[in-house]
Image (cartoon, rainbow, N blue to C red; front, side, top):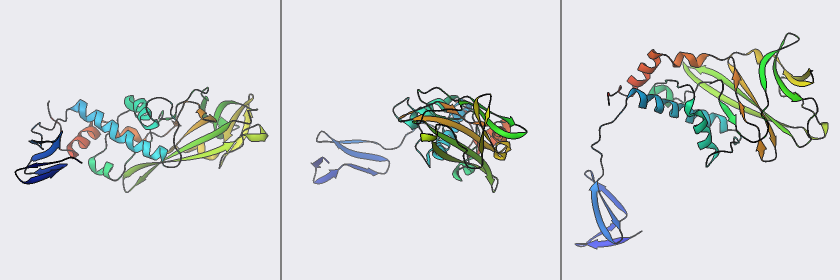
Length: 250
């Protein structure tokens, strides 16, 4: 760290006092204001963008707490996830709710991005039993791996929170998919369906990712959960904005 001497005073790095910052650069002592006189701007458009970023950041933490998600674009997985989510549904949470870690399950949330063919799937029924019905063939490669993401929406003390759990299975020598926890496999028109009562839960969502080595498919959550809709209304917007001090006109 550079040191310069002026009138008997040594300045090392940065010193802030009374709103003034002193620092050294190229052997010279520089003084500038350490506070900004710019007013805080919080227009409706700015607040919407900030609300989306704040919530998506917390969704990323929920997605990545167990395994590192796979996204090929951008400088890293996090920035690519945030880029993909930049046009997601904005939800409006108060400062207090965000402080308690509030998150909402958003159908269509990406969980992976890669170059392998995407798995097609939807929620339905097989012989009257809830199921995640896919286009995966009955026979698969022994180098394939499947990852099932299960997102669960909970409300604790009126604060909504999402937990996301990932379960992997290697296809290996069996050359076919087997059931994940709480499910069994049935073949429908030559394709794999994961069958289980959990797929009827309207507070859960699922995504199935195909992984082969360092490559993966691009997948999104499917869900019947609609809790997030309560946080997209004009009333939710105004309550959230008020918790931050309200909006500004400019």
